[in-house]
Amino acid sequence: MSQRKFKRAQQKTKKCSEKEAQPAPERQSSVQAMVWYREEDWETLIAMFADAEMLPRTYEAWLERAQEMQEKVQADGDAVIKVYIDPITFPKWCKDKDLPMNAEARAQLAIEVAQAQTFSL
Image (cartoon, rainbow, N blue to C red):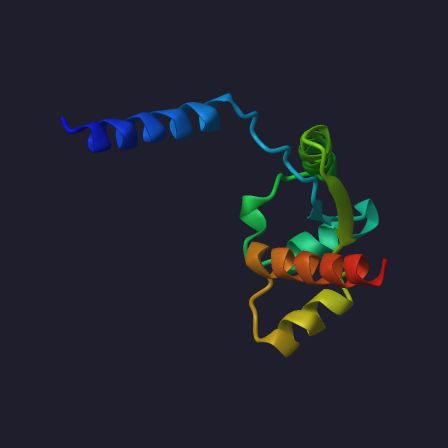
């Protein structure tokens, strides 16, 4: 191996070891939008969702799962914005967007609301 190639190899090795020695950059916290339901709206919403079978049968079971997810997100350092699905406005919103009333639409609404809230802060 020529001296020139040897020096290049040393430089590459040095750069690699410097990268490994540097701590990983800190993760920036973010805002997570979470779909949320009011107990008094649960039965009405379940009846209108195209994918109701994907949700827990009871509000209490859903709430327990949602709170666990919220705690995990917050433990990771992120903020949570709860976006409540309203049984009166959600069907109109879906119709205006030509979307079925399913999880994808609920998630899209949550993202839109969260973005609007974070931009106005």
